[in-house]
Length: 340
Image 1 (cartoon, rainbow, N blue to C red):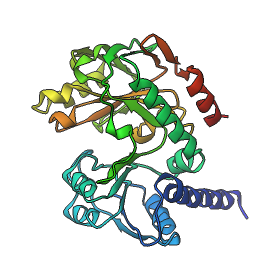
Image 2: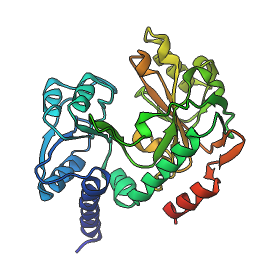
Image 3: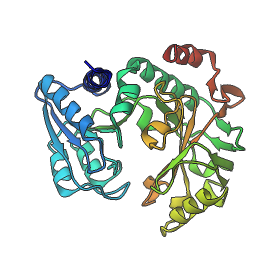
């Protein structure tokens, strides 16, 4: 048997394993559960088929819908919106994701769990789901969230010149809390946590030096994008052509909230050690920080995510992360296991 054939068979076996892990550990399904799998024309159809096969093997009832790719963040096609109302689990592999869309909100209100895996391909699924300790990822997520919510202020710096201070909102963020009992909820790829920040409190210099998406014209960055944040709003941009494109894209929408700081997240998936240009994994680079721009909850019609590499993070006066390494003793005890 030739080496190429052996390698292909090994890859297929790992993909089947990762799909099963997705549906038994990450988003467990039970016999009879209705599972909607969406994969637009730019999605990796092999991933969608493997997930469909895993769902059937577990006794669930999967439906796969494919359709032309639309805008990066946009409304779901009518057929998807209708199917989502009948599903208990909605796994999205589409490059054009539906998080925060009307179909997403209706599905959650109807009790559906939406799993956002936008743009996932075979290699990413194996590295970020099949080969990691998903239970430990969840433990790190909860600990980081609890520690971050217990303080008053957060400061973020990086070697690229990032230096932003912000106030933590003690109300907390439902996104990182236990799932609600009266409706469905969103679920993201493991390896990310965060806290609730008072948007208007973000001040300083924000530097994205890993990746930014959308717009589709960016992705993996060659030069950093530097923004001045004043009371939560990006007021100035610098850094070359990438910064120009980003500012033009954000300002092309007639909404002040498009320029507003939206969220703060930690990244720690051990299967991602450097940016690739695919935002799903880029915002989980082990040791990164990811910042959202565009406050959709306040009316922004667009939202973008950017990655800060090698961050240093203070929670009040306590150092939790230094140059991309987790240094808080409790957190480091867990993250060291992830990369062991």
